[in-house]
Length: 398
Image (tube, rainbow, N blue to C red; front, side, top):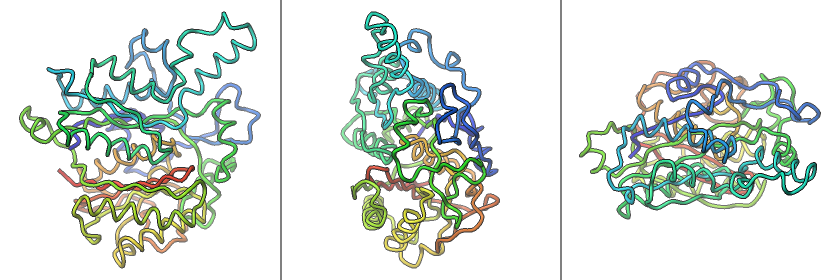
């Protein structure tokens, strides 16, 4: 079960601010104004504004780590604080994160020092700060967590797989796991790496750059940020009087290959069926779907067809939403943000809208414009990675 939610997103810092923007359908997509990015063809992204890392993380950790780890540590601190988690035995608490881009900004800075000034000007933390495992390591060191720790490398879908990994650790006897994902790929080196993705949107208008399921869809917009959670054993949470936010009920994962969007139909459908089976959830029990929503027409069609394959006739009735259209796709951080939105939607009885999209091309009930009042008990969160991973996660209302 989830007892803590921590969010660092383009639309808000902290779960409350993030939810307010999400339920109102606000978009934070904006022209990229980072130093060194002005000559790149990628013009729009989801940027986290107003984030002061020093408000969340001690200086000794900041100098060792990249912005993606600052986000993860801050989100983890928010989740731990919300869960009021107190550690008596450090070997009963673990950490699991997912990351795809790693510490690109830190790595670029040190490589520039190497080639500009020589090896003696490269800091010792270059060896760890760029590494995709840095967030797990720093969160565990900072919190003194000595239980099972790990890193999921499953491209974007890893944001859901990390939570499944945490749930399985709980099933093997761990009392609590801090789990989730955060990314920071909006720096020149990281952005150049992303230019190779054929689905990347190069549209310059923030309101038109990322329109999943829309007839004007032209690809996806990258973003930074993410979410972290406290996943706990039910008995442990009940014994200490923790507030239960939601239940992790089921998970499924498959792999269908890089950018093979037509093939992702079968892979995603199988992941959905696997998650529903683990959750002992019938297709018509799904009350809301948080879509992967790539914004590439072929991929969006495949996702809608996968829902029809897995949910049958119910696929045309269940509300579908894609809040990430207002934040951009923060790689592994995006499905984690969708899980946060799903938890808050289950709690508040509201299905948030899909920002900017107005002309839905798919045969799904896409929520647009305004939030929809509902009483959802079960949410299905979907994610596909650009390298071919597919994942589905079922959440139940507490």
